[in-house]
Image (cartoon, rainbow, N blue to C red; front, top):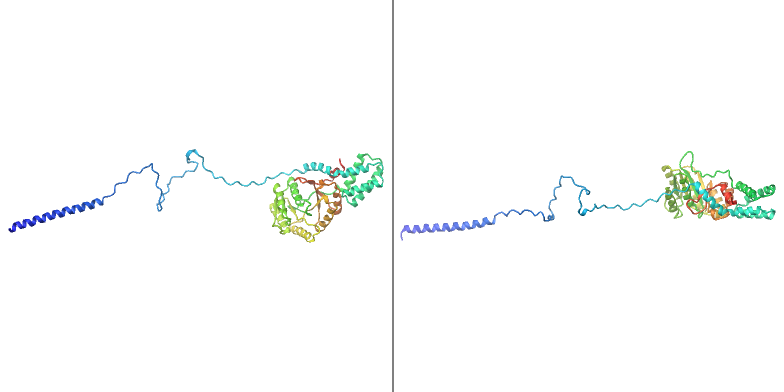
Length: 406
């Protein structure tokens, strides 16, 4: 074989090899280009599909600048009204009562008093109407007066004057006897005494009234009723619950005060009564009220230590100002025992007036005469029942008329 043919054969082989290698290289490159093609563009979003839930790490949407609408401007589905959250109801304050005026209650109480007390007057008039007034009759007159708790000394004075005037009078008609008896009883009761409850001092405010008395006489109730009398007369009142020894006393007094819009000052149970009384006057001055009423504990007259405590209350209160009134509450049904209580209280504090309670439940109205004679101070108020407005100023003429019957 010659050299030329050999060379052609080699060249041909080289060309074939190059072609084969080139074809293989194109296949590899094509395969790579298919793998690196970009993904197709995303399809248009479906506006009817619900929005996708946000995932943890997603950024919050940037707030829009357009103004936000109020709930009233948004149309709620189904035409329903906006949901309103209701506030819890606020408890209503107790309604303030308007107490009955003093003048109106006197008319009603006079009638009630006459029904319960005129047994005394009828008995006396029956005895005095006898044709012959012998010693036995006059003894019966004395017994009638003593049974009505008029007292020994006032009874003796009344009988002596009646005997003298009947002797001078001669013939005695029922009207003459009634007039005679009325005059003499009025002399004993007293018509020239100042019976006003002093609550308006000229040089300062407030007026200070302290109420004292034995347990069971209706002392706290009387204090509350007196507040009603003052409010009915246009006064403003602060109540001092200085009866700290009886658990329910402060609550009872506060209830009375709330009914007429009066503020009540109270302290801890079994606390210092003098401290409560002092604070009551202090707050009354700061509030600018007209009257401060101080209810004290119902101390038994046999307990010397408690009576000393009452004297302390008086002294502490007077660091603010002098007391204008010290009212002693007595139960009309206790009779002569009430006079013993009155004497002891008068030794501790200067009693300026008497309040007789439960006067409608007894025919012993003579206690009015006896207690005034014993203490030398007037009966200023009388209580004739359990009603809120059953406390009234004492009127001698109305009382005597009720005793003897009009």
